[in-house]
Image 1 (cartoon, rainbow, N blue to C red):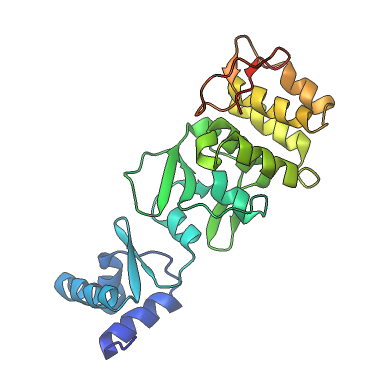
Image 2: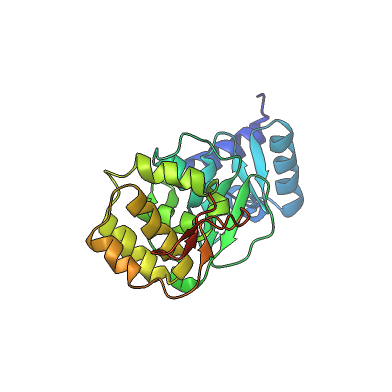
Length: 235
């Protein structure tokens, strides 16, 4: 891409400054220019594909999209199918980057922000320029909202792929902390179906409550009931 001297200055200044995402106001302050000039520079950089628009922000071409997703909406962390893929538990690449947040976000192309309560917003770590769910929390979040991780069939594959590396105690701790009986039932059932019946599944079983729920809430009822976990095994 052929940039003018001022455009090159703007681009290199943003890159050196480590800006994952920026707004026109940031450019004004960095270059000491007025709003009209900053907008013209942004328009030119965008036309030359040196930057791209992400919601109300802009990001440099080649920027880590997961880091951008976290930067443009706070607080948030990468989770669900995106995190499962990041950890190599899924061989699928989701079309959208899925993030958990406590604050609603309008739809942003390429990103999906799933609103969860503040007490469920935990179990994440800083990795480079991004924030991502721990492996176990990614599984727990996915079982809470299976549709954001490709459905129960895909989550089952991910858990099977990570069975040796997943910390089962942490899985149970996080599931119980989230406080969803449907989630607890799904996790306990999946673990036992993989031959992992033991101390942690018994902990989960003590918190299943009453009433049947769907193993996969996005699939119709099948009437295949599992009495131990109070699940309609519809997937």
